Every structure is written in C-alpha cells, then in structure tokens.
Length: 228
Figure 1 (cartoon, rainbow, N blue to C red):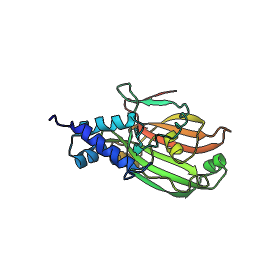
Figure 2: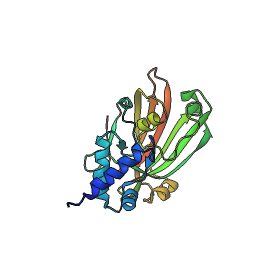
Figure 3: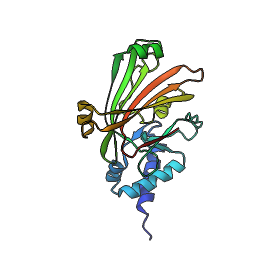
Figure 4: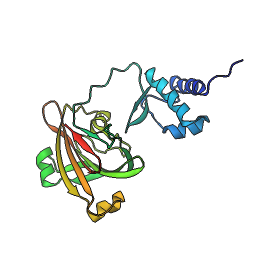
C-alpha cells in the first residue's frame, strides 16, 4: 500500500482541527517552524500544507500577520488603500517582521492633539527586522476612543493592522524625510552612530478624510527605496 505523503497527512489533520472547532475561526497559528516540529515534518513540507489550506479558504496568510484560521463563508475583506511601497536592495517588496513590541497608552503631543482632536492615544512601539537583522524603529498611534489597546502581535502593515481592529482606512498620506541615528537608535538597531535613516510618516484616513492612525517608521536606509 502506498504511503500517504507527509504534507497530505498534515493537511488532513489540520482540516480536521478546523472543522471540529479545535482551531476556531480567527485563531492565530504558530509559525511554520513550530507547526512543522509539532507534526514531525520539515518546514518546507508544512509550508506546502498551509498553502493548500489557504487555497481552500480555510486559512488566511499574510506577511506580518501570521496565519489565521479563516471563515470560508465570510465576505472578502475590503481592498487595502493604495499606499507608497518600500523596496529592498533586490528591488522586491521590503519584508519586515516584529522583533520586539510594546503597547500602551500615552498623552498626545501638541501636533498629535491637533491632528486627532484628542489628548489620549493608544501607542505601539516596535523594533522590526529583515533577514534576521534589526533595521527599523516603528511607532503607531491611534486615538484611544477608536482602539483602547493595540495588539503587540499586530500586523506590520498599517492597513492590515487597522482592518484587523475593525477600522476601514480609505486612504494613506505619506511623508518621507531623512535623518541619522541617535545613540539610542544605534543601540536599538545594533548599528553605527550616525547611520542614515529613511523616515516614513504615514497617516491613515477614513472615507471622510478623518485621521485614524499615524505610523512613524525610522528605517536604516541602506539599499532601501520608496516608490509612491
């Protein structure tokens, strides 16, 4: 009798868990390496199984968001608003992942209070990495009245983060600037003092043009480009 391929056995067990409710809709699954170890297969074999379930509409997978159990009967999510794109040295999309994050509440600066019309903000401060190296310091702020606590495991992409929180950004305004690292930045990013930074300030707005969130991404600029 022919052996069942390993990826097919993993698919079958994952489908069972989803359909039996062991993995409920919305559950964030562990990463591919953890799942591969649990099922006793290679990371590549697990990736193939996950891709199959994604094609069946049972999983939703996006860089920066992880793998979520999907509701196959749900309506498709609204398209993300158009925004500028950061590209890496190879010319492809810049793939960032969270290295460290901290969520909390804080008072707004005068400029933020003028933008949002409130003095209380939910904030998410993160160190992001690419290919294993720390390359960016990121802060996202949202009025506390809209989101009272940001998720430390939230998506890297601002539009995805807001949509996951039940907000629907309709547009993004970007502003680009240049700077160099401070001593604190250099320690956080494990780079030399005065390393060149690209600073992306992105403001998400609703359909009426009202600001929903602001992201300030301070990224080591080596080989990075921004395309509007």
